[in-house]
Image 1 (cartoon, protein in one colour):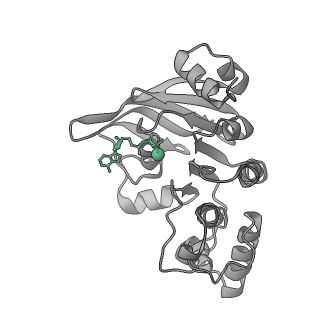
Image 2: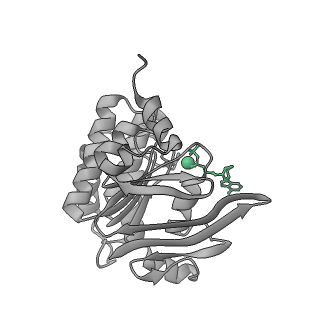
Image 3: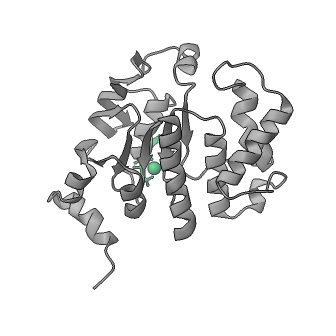
Length: 252
Ligand SMILES: Nc1ncnc2c1ncn2[C@@H]1O[C@H](COP(=O)(O)OP(=O)(O)OP(=O)(O)O)[C@@H](O)[C@H]1O
Ligand SMILES: [Mg+2]
């Protein structure tokens, strides 16, 4: 069954058409990685799936519900099991790491029942999520006290603390050192395996793409130009796909 279904999506900003009939289907418990040149519209696509942007034409379905044309309140219910790691982490600068990480739990309560959670349980869940991303004992720090990579990991902790079953990751490893990047890749896989989560990962990091994906997709010219199982995608002779793999090879 398709968990996320994007049908013929079109979106322009002014006279600039970013999405031009984009279609994508992601199965339950699958991880699809999206590759594409800077500015091709990958972040715009993710924002349509979580409902921050509305399409000019076309539809977005999540778990059998058409979310693209829902009213705010209905949409909020329909995507409550979805979380997004925004490009650049997007922490709240005036909140501590602990307050940032606890944000969704404070806002939405228990992930399944929606009931408010006791403060001590929120504290424990936050500590556990921070430990999962290697940020133990940073609770009292402000985002401005953290390095870029640490901010990124704090953003990830804020996402996974809520245990969403649909995860959208926008550049989860960009700007991280290779060891930390690999830890994040493992975390993405672990989340998928433990929660049976459905994920879309946008990345420029070929190593990450190959580690976390079940299928790979190339986003170009406003649509998904090619999507295939990992083995098949890697061997594709599409010149745009070859560019991605060739630039990732060390120079000879
Ligand atoms: N809210 C907006 N208003 C106007 N233009 C926008 C808006 N959001 C995105 N765009 C434009 O849409 C295009 C696609 O942007 P998007 O952020 O999706 O690119 P991307 O594929 O994520 O690139 P990158 O890999 O650099 O993150 C860009 O030209 C961008 O300037
Ligand atoms: Mg982007």
